[in-house]
Amino acid sequence: MKESEATTIPELKNDATSEQELTYSYPVHWFRGTIFQILVVGGVFFCAPGMYNALSSLGAGGLATPWYANATAAAGYVFMAFFCLIGGIIVGKIGVKAALLISSTGDIIYAGSLYLNSKNGTQWFLMFGPYNLQNTAYGLISNFLFAGSILSGCTDGLMYTVEGPVITSYPEPHRRGRMLALWVFMRNAAPVIGGAIIFGLNSSLDSSGGVSLETYLVIIGIMCAGPFIATLLSHPENVQRKDGVKIRMRKAGWRQTFNEWYRVVCSANILLLCPLFFTSWFYGSYIG
Image (cartoon, rainbow, N blue to C red; front, side, top):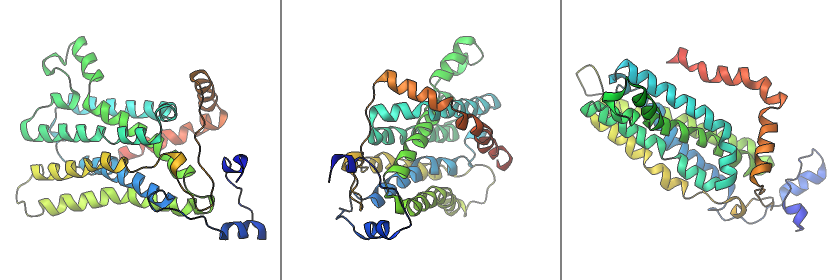
């Protein structure tokens, strides 16, 4: 196969030629195949943001004072939005696999802070700042710089950025719809399964209030599997597709990267989508 053919994805056409091309399949190892890569990304999302969504319905965050509850929520979402915006630059520099591994760790730390807050009332872990200085300028700055919720927001924003290239570029063109459906199924199944685990562990409780501490430990244990699953992701150049097309990440310098990033962010298409972005985040307020 020529180099030019190996770096481009064939365009799908509704004619006999394209159908004949799609019937030919190159040998693929299951570990390097596109289905396994989607399962890895879905598994990481299941363990990290998926279990976090299940934890968000529990009482540990609600046990915090209003100041800490509001501050952690605001800080987490602000930094999540920021890293969603610049995440593409980070992924392009450190690689897809490293970005997925890093993004699977932040929710574990924040889940641990929820557990300790539920057990011992240690609210400082929610924000990683000095509790006795929370009302001073120094305390506010230090809290927001080292907040546990900020770590979770940063890693979640990076995960939302890295999963996009894997889902859209790894699969073959004629299988992208099925791979997208598989990924959506796994990410939406996480809160359902997490909720079932929470219900099963607490169905026998006869007291009102928060759930048992064992519930947090089980959810955190599932979250800890995320980084190990992330290590199974193949680098783009090692992925084997049934159409024989190789995936190559284009290398660019910092100046070119920022110039292209600026053109994309400031393009009319992205600016026109901003109301949709705003709605997609804030509609959850009515559900919550």
